[in-house]
Each structure stands twice: as C-alpha cells, then as structure tokens.
Image 1 (cartoon, chains in turn red, brown):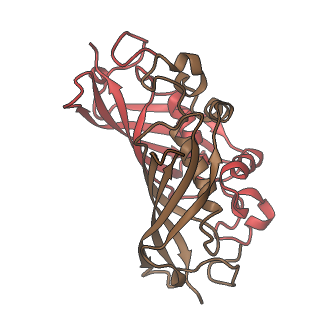
Image 2: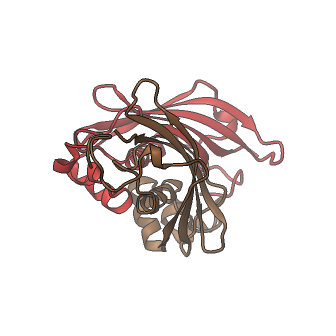
Length: 154
Length: 154
C-alpha cells in the first residue's frame, strides 16, 4: 500500500465513509480439521482440539477458539471493506455470544458507527466499525467493535 | 475437562483466585515465516505478508497481524494460567500500542483484576483478567482485558 494519504489505491478514504454505511462479506465454511489445526497452534484446550473429549466440557462438543472466529472474521472483513491503505486496527472489543461449531458457515456484516478526524494528525482519522459474524442460521457468533486508522484524501 | 464444578482437575477454582494475583507465561519467539503464514490465512494484507512491500506502508516494515499477536498470547496464557475447566472467554477488549515484529520474543503477564460470583448460576463466576504481551525489550505489544467463566468449588 501507499503511505497514508500519499496516493490513490482504489480504496475508500475517511472522506468517503459515512456513519451507517455497511459492508457484507463473502462466506467461509469451517470444518473440524480447521478448528483443530488452529487450536493446536494457538488455543490447545480439549474443547477446541478433541471432538470426543469436548462432549464432557462446558461447550458440550467441539467449539472453535474465539481467536479462530476472530481471525476468520478478519479474513472476511479484509476482502469486503476496501479501505485505502488497508485495515489497520488500533484496538477492538469482542464478545462471543455463541460457540462457533465445525459445520458453521461464517459471514461478517460491518457497519460504520463513528468517524473522528484526528486532532494531532490531520492526514488521518479513526473510524469505529461494528462487525457481526453470523452462521448459516443467522445466529450471532461474534460481535466486534473495532477502531481503524483511515487516511484522509490529501 | 470436567463439567463446570463437577470434579477436581488440578486447576484453580473461583474460590482460589484473588484480585492482584499474577501469572507469568513462558516465551514464544516469532519469525517472518510465522507472521506471513498466519496473515496469508487470516489477514492477507501486504504489511503482514510481504516484507519488501511492507516497507512503504503505515508499518514501515513487516508487522504481525494483531490477531496473530492475540493468538500467540492466548497460547502463552493457556500454558500459564491453570484454571479448572480451562480458559473459557466470554469477551475481551484489546489494544495494540505497538506493532509486533518478526524478531520479537513474546511473553504474557496476566493479573486478576476483578472476581464476580454469578447471580443466576451459583456454580460459577466471571473473572476479569488483564494480560499484557511484551517483547524481549519489555515493550508492550498488546493489552487485553478479558472475562473468563470460572467454576466455583462444589
């Protein structure tokens, strides 16, 4: 990507975004192998790595790590929200109201909820977005509020 | 793991935790290959996947996806905080004050900041922890406040 604000890259600038604007992602089909592979590297707990052992746990069956749900959601967001300079997160708040399961097909709907110009850096601003990750039954698996650094047009 | 509160598994129960208690993890050495592999699957943007292209971006060099930092931090946390029934997150707030780089060695220090018994479910409570991920220079890369579901002793 180009340095912030330096040149056009076809993406949206702060000036192009409006509160209430939405982005709908494509879909990602999970499966047991993906859940176990991710969790084996990053969240090695029986309810994320072993379908049989998971039956007797809090989750009553294999569940994806919340960080796996977050990471797949990021992949979907990257391909659906074309922000100039890329999606650069300053921070996020996440809740997981429901476990993500091996047969879930994930999709992310994102809404722009706040836009603030930077006081100290006139070439950029902070855009707050709310992204809801749902499965094929329209059940919410993750709700994420995140703050992105977005360049202004020069 | 055992159903919540059903039997001992050697881990800590809500009753064993105290505000101010800390857990220090082991370390995880990142490298360029890990950063690129994670980002290729979950955050495919040039500043996370291409060291040369990353030079001309906001990050001025290859940086790990924030979700990669979060995921490695989770792995370190799982092996350092032995909670009965496992680490079951209800939600989290994350900030990334500094980019994670390819030569960083990550370590997570976690502090118990709040303990609340559940009103509706007397067999469990919610423990709020603050986890700081630092590199080998003691620079903070990630600050995460998360809420865990923790069983009480029966």
